[in-house]
Image (tube, rainbow, N blue to C red; front, side, top):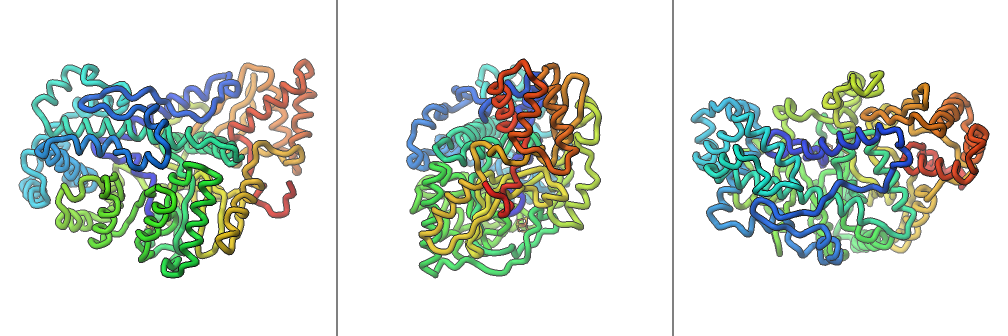
Length: 592
Ligand code: SF4
């Protein structure tokens, strides 16, 4: 499925991820406040109401929330609605900018020429052959070769929620008046940035229900954010991934999942297999509600490896009303045609996403499909020449990612936050699912969540327990059993207490710090913190850690003036912030 989450760092101009980065940095600052635990809130993305923006009034968040989940699939996405609202001439111009931006991202030579305003005749001609008019190239070069305007562009994207025509700076506004291509491109990206935030809001906040799965999911999301920083704040935490086979034929050297060689496919023509997938969808819907629409039918697999992949996605759509996303690294023309048809009707969607492994692949695709025909699917540059803009995730294969990981110096190598250049810390994982990983051949469901890649977790995700299923009827009971066993509302009193395995404990004069690869969590200037730090330090040095009740008793001994209830509540907040290890629950020998 190829580095699915990397798209957050590459979009179009210099770096749309600046939006997510700024939100992340704001949170790093928040996490350093001394009232850390007491300020821990529910998972909540920063989200102000979506106002009218430059040329278009998208749905407000409230409107989005009020639409019944199954009807949401019918509503136009904000991006598509805007594109459809354009005149034919403007739509064509916008599609050309999109194609050009794919070359800007995926061709280092052209990118350099654009930035220095020295685009050669060779590229003008090539782009023209691929449907990008000379006028479009020239106008976009005006933008991309102008650092000041690019910075302004990034600033607007970073503040997309508040951005209105009036708020665009005077200098940039006058620039746009003479550059319709740049204006269309900017407008689309503002809408896309807002839509991304709205999608995050949906994905992170709407999945609430009776199941303890939701308590677990919130803890895990906090944990992912704590340990992977910017990446954790950027992903939308899909709820599940279903593998329709074993292994992957693509075998990328940089595969951070270290996908094994392809062995077998889940056969669509076997009717019992169709029943199994239907039963899985139904079980997910019962446990996760709208979360049944928030996953994908691939993980360490390539969708195209299964000849009936689209049939399976369609089956999920028929069963649940949700068209799941697709990201593929295959550039087979018929496959792309079939995918674009599937996602193109009845209303176009911004899918599939095509990971492009070489300039040759990109050219082949662009020669076959006009800019209009690929106006909605996105092409994500993955070729080597994009690496100076976006490095591959260090993880997965021993000789590639894991070797690089050993060279990384993250926050845990520094004494203070001030010494760290957060930008130098790589994206620590490509995993994104906070929920269930299912393999339909092995008939297993695994509870999983991303983590910063380490020797212990070389694939960039932790697992919390696996359960088998056999028949369609066995899936729901198995899923519920897994949830009941490893996705707890709180730890039982006899559970062992350990810190999350990525965290460094540093005792300070007035409390303690927990340092992950990407963040310094500072717990200082409160008697609770001083005593919690002491208990954590003693516990860390013990061969057999204290149980939860022993741990709380130790804390109570040191806090005689606090009521037992206050101490217990304090511990629960610490636990709910995702700092405590829960992977021991995956050990079948451990009794609840
Ligand atoms: S080997 Fe397969 S699963 Fe791994 S990155 Fe490549 S396409 Fe994706």
